[in-house]
Structures are given as structure tokens and as C-alpha cells.
Length: 513
Image (tube, rainbow, N blue to C red; front, side, top):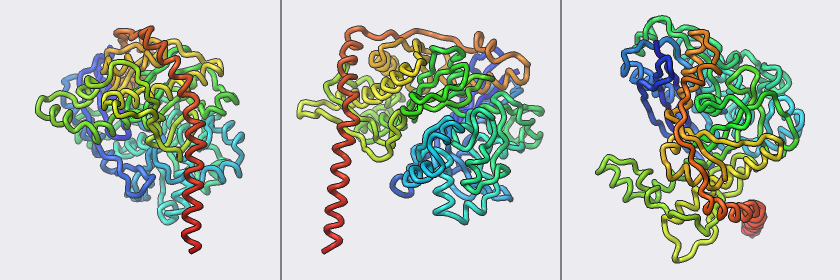
């Protein structure tokens, strides 16, 4: 028997099939675009995403003779789709970097009570969360809000398409800011303020719970055998952390993808004011009784993609001609040593610790002698510095990380992994399978079908490779540079506020004339 994990990301989905020992048998990928119909908006065509998931499942299942016995689902957080009673999709899904609800966050949260909100949900306010996206929908598209029979995240939406009664795993429900992370239920006091009935949301279940069995007709359509069980996985980051073998405190996943994210695991919920001030959340992990947090940059891997699209045309052409990867070519041309540039990597709204949706990114220190390769390295340094800032805050709250496990597309690059290890000053362990999101939920599917505890499966399913150690000389340079980086945000924030105020005064003056 084999087990399939589907990982529904922001820019694409992957389906991986693994045998009973966690060896990858087949992998399929489908890409889809993030749409920006208005400034500050970022959304997905939900129908296209689900079609892509089904195509990926079909391709991966067809690529192996080992029959699939179980399917686990991992999903990006926060994005939801309004669904009519007849199953029609009434709109697109606002993804994490969508900032259209920014103006609603402060007033609503203060009225409800920030501390009260944190104690219920384990999260601090930010426009990325489903709660505020729903508020925006209710205010700006009331016909869609009222006409929707259900609001589904992508895990639950895929369940519906697979012919099942949709469920949402606790780690994904926690990312909506509608969920009580200690009582494991939709929070009635929050839903009441939103005029939202819990019946319009999927039923919350623990990760690893069997959601149902795929009906025979749909299984045949996907090239799956009869009797395939679907298992709840949840938010992609803790699913990926499980797939990286994170089952004890002190070890954390480091994911390099569209969003750059670090995800540890700890043994009880920690709703601590030190974490709250740094916007470091607490919510369910993918193992029973364990909790997690996420440290993340929303710009993350988007920055490398942006650099490729804007400044990497020669590498794109070379990749098309040679069959090589354009990102590998770009990283091969990157400066070898730490730069004198400082980059604030807020090319999208920031993630933790500042939750700043207004301050734009910046590159400080450019000269005529600055090379393209130095600019690229400085950008990647900026993202890694932001992650180190988060790690330091976590450590101050008593949650130290001694080892990172690298997953995601960036984990395949030794150059990029070395840069991160140098900036963090800690080892980063590489893995035999970097598609840990697929592996983690396939592992949960295996556990549900066979009865084997997930912790025991980790010992055989997760194979570590090399540990990339920090280079002492570069790490020392980055220690100095990190002290400078810590001053960058407050300085640029003050400067930008002056720029914005000045612009408003000029606009008001022009309107008066």
C-alpha cells in the first residue's frame, strides 16, 4: 500500500505518493497564478486551484503501481472561498499577503479586546487572517457574504470536491482567528461579532482524523482504487514540520517557499505576553497534545522570484536553452561573501514580528560599484536576518531552537542553505525528501490506515542528510550586521511615516486650491 499527500500552496500544489517506509514513489506539481485585481489585493481562482489539485493527484497516482490506501491534505492558511448552497463558488480566495482588510483590523480588534482575542485564538490581529477577510467581505460584498452557505479553506474545499463532508484540521482552523485553540471549537463570541453561524464553517477535527472514504465514482475519475480514506492534515507549516521530523522541543522546520517560515513544536499551549508582543502565535501542532508557533516572512521566496522576473532575463533564457533551473543559475552568480548592503525585506506586508502592512521594502547602501550579485545576496540576507530576529524573540520567551530542518524548494540549494546557516549561527539539517508537506500528511494517512503512531513513523519515514554548519568567519560578520539590522526597521518606520504625512499634507493643500 502507498499513501498520498497533497500540499495546496499559494502558487501551486504538489501531490506526492510514498510507500509504507516513507520513500517517495511519485511527485506531481501544478502551478496557478496569484491574481491582483486591485492594489493590495492577492487572491486565487479557487476553482482553478481545486482542478489543479485533482490533476496532481491523478498524475501522481498514475505514476506508481503501488495502490493508494490513504490521502492526507495539507493547505495554505487563512484563504477561504465562499460557496453557495448548490456548490457554486461565489468568489476567489484572498491569500495571506492580501492586505485589503488592513483598515478594519485595529478598530474591530480594539472593540472586541486585543488581549481577549489573543487568549481565545492564540493569535494577534493582522489583515492576513480569515476573520478580517470575512469582515471585509461582509462590508464590501454583502451579497456574497449573505449568499454563501459555507466558507471553506482549501483543505475543506478539496474534501467537498472529493465527495466528503468537509472537515478542517485544528492547525488550519487555528489560522482563521475564529477558533478557540484550547477548547478546540469555533469561538462563539467571535462568530457572534461577525454575524456568522458555526454551521457555515467546516467541522473542526484533530490532525490525523479520518474525514471519510472517497466515493467509488470519484476515485475512478482520479485513478484511485476503491476504499481510499481521506485524513485531515491542516495548515501547511506544521504539516511540513512533521514531515521534517519535528517531534521534540529544540528542533524546528525551516521552510523556504513562497512564504519563508520557521515552525517548532512544544508540549503545551504558551500564551505568553512576550510572544504576544512579537506577534508569535500559539496554535495546534499536527501531533495530539502538542502546539506550535510560526515565525515568517510573507515576502520570503517571493523576493527571489521577483528578482528573477525583473533582473534575471539572461538566466531565464539560458535555463530555457539548457534545461537548467533559472534559480540555480541566479544563485550561482550571487556574491560569495556577506555584503555591506542592508535590505528590509518588506516587498509584501511583513510577517512576524512587526505585522506591518504599510512600510515598504528598502535597499540601503547602494553605490555605483554595487553589483547585481551583491544586490541578490543582500536581499536573501535581509530575509534571513528577519528570521533571525524572530528566532531571538522566541528564545527570549524560553523556546530556544538548536537545530533547523530545511524543507521546500530552497532546501535543494546548498548555497542558499549555507547563507541561512551563516546568518542564524546554527546548523541546518538537510533531508532526503524536501517535499515535507506532502510527506507529513501522507504519514498521517499511513498512521490512520495502519494504526501506527505518527511519532514512530517519523523514525523510518524521515531521513536526514548533511548538517550545514555555519562558517565561523561569515557568521561573525553576520553577528555584526545583525546588530545593524535590528536598528533598520524603527529608523525606516519613522522616516516613512514622515514621507506619508508629507504626501497627505501636499494632497490636502492641492485639494484646497
